[in-house]
Length: 113
Image 1 (cartoon, rainbow, N blue to C red):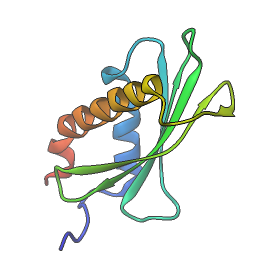
Image 2 (tube, rainbow, N blue to C red):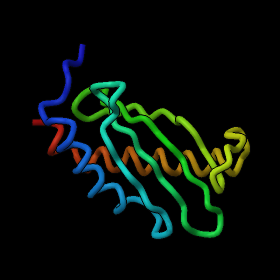
Image 3 (cartoon, helix red, strand yellow):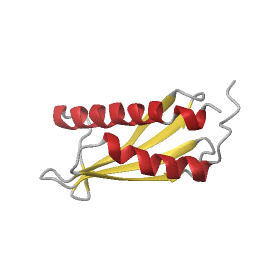
């Protein structure tokens, strides 16, 4: 059973906030914060400021020092909830999840102490 990371959540959230934009498209912006509901989780909000104006919210939980579980919480377009099952939204979400996993790998030096 995983007993948690050795780094505190605030430091981890700040590291994610600094690193994640490097893995996103230039039209994307993100915010990362600790999850008040779950001790081992972060909340990630990614907004596309390009023509599509989609935004997505994710919960990220560390399964161990290197592996993360990413859960989609919500997708909106212009502040209106959208069907998450459409092909375009699925592709967008898959792309964001891939970028989140790439960022997690880049931070393994921080989380694997």
